[in-house]
Length: 92
Image 1 (cartoon, rainbow, N blue to C red):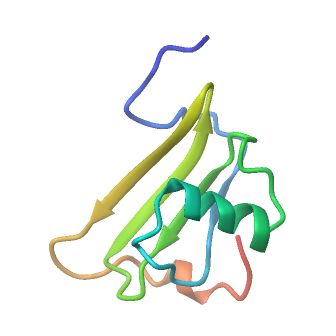
Image 2 (image 1 turned 180 degrees about the horizontal axis):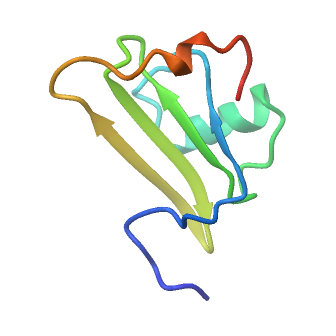
């Protein structure tokens, strides 16, 4: 078993940016349900999923690590996230 870390492993198999804004009241359960139902992915695969809010000033990151889901939350004090995540017409 790997040592627990406060950051994701830099050797993650993949990272997906979810293009549409999500309701930030969702917990890891709601976000992983989005992964499974809308994307058709296995949320237990270890792939990292990034979600943003409508204002693009917050992100939530969810992934499976060993025996549980890890969720990171980032809220910008000023400005918004780069527009790159909003330019894609599909999940990246």
